[in-house]
Image (cartoon, rainbow, N blue to C red; front, side, top):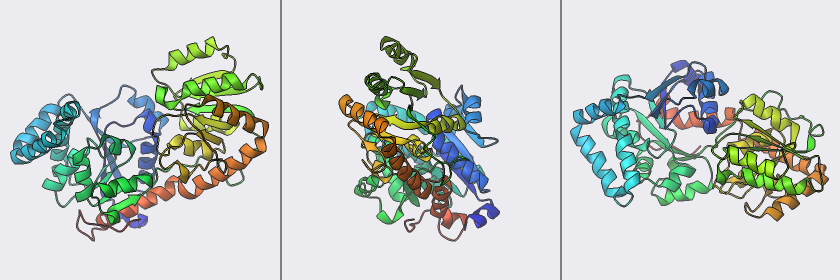
Amino acid sequence: MTDRAAASKRSIWVVTMAYPVPSEAFASAEINELRRRGVDVSVHTLRGQRRDHDEISAQQSLGDTLVGHAWSGSVWRGLESAIRHPKLALRLWWRLVKTLITRPTVLAACLFWSLRCFELLAVAQRERPDVIHLFWGHAPSMLGWLVIEALPDVQVTTCLGAYDLDLALPIGFEVGRRCAAVRTFAEPNMGALIGEGIAAEKIHLIYQGIPLPKGISDDLPTDGKDHKRMVFAGRLIPKKGAEMAIQVLARVVQAHPTTMLTILGDGPLRDSLRRCVDRLGLSEAVAFHGHVSRTDLYRELQSAALFLLPSTHRERLPNVIKEAAAARCCCLTTSTPGIEALIRDGESGRLLDANDLEVWVTAVTELIEHPETASRMADRACDTVRRQFDIRRTTESLLRMWEPRLDASEPANGVRERS
């Protein structure tokens, strides 16, 4: 199927809020893999270009990926498009008001983003892409609704994942019911989607894949790892748990003084975390590296034995856990929906209470003192990543989801078998 898709050069739009984003490298990985396969894919964002666009593009190896950002004239262009489609505009805005009247902040945001969606509708009318895929099913769903109404020959697919389910925009679920196919990232999401009236047969469980780095092979040794070296990677915000990782280290070094913690990522807590490290006398044991490239991320992970993510957020199987497992780190994290697809407590990692410092200290200490246990669990998780989360496999599933339109053999917005 992928050979046919590459040969035909059918066009796919991927619609998201911003691109590229440091915390959403998985989006770039997927788009890069699609382009590697010869698929004509372009990205269209609801937000404007970020200030760090060039830096993040280089980190995520975007090359010459075509990206259309919102700009200073998007509001006026969108308003012009809405005026050209007055009945469509009134119907969309009435839907938003009717369903979000009790959530005025969300309503105001949606009305604003709807103008960028109208601008993109005008572009889609000119370019007629074969597929418009909503990478997120919240604000971008307004474009999906407009396309379903105005361009029935264009296939619309959407993704409804963690944040989409938490935000629960009614128009996002309506698009899910009406579009050709719905992607979701974790099995526990499927019940919620069916509960919103989305037909089970159009829901595709397709994990967010990761590109397995060169050097990650079936026989990558774990005995060369430093069993007293730990890594935390994530945005430095309260719910990600970087401060808990530091507190764990402060306790563990009392029994194992040479234990080290590397913190990868940036965010608003950076300065306060540095002060916390200094206050605890850990400046020689903690290294802050900020945002790093994928290559540098794997280099740090491959040299460490333990990966800590004491997140209090409903992560739903974060990609960084997959990356740590691929590098054969033993992962310690919290129990969130879908995590059991990769980490099973005591078998392929540890699932711990995010707020119980004693439990974390005990678990880390045991793994430092018994590195063979950490190695065994890391090997099992690494095997799972290779089997289920390789970007080549997940992209193949995504292409199968789009197959009817890419082959031009079925109506644009029909129902498909689950992959």
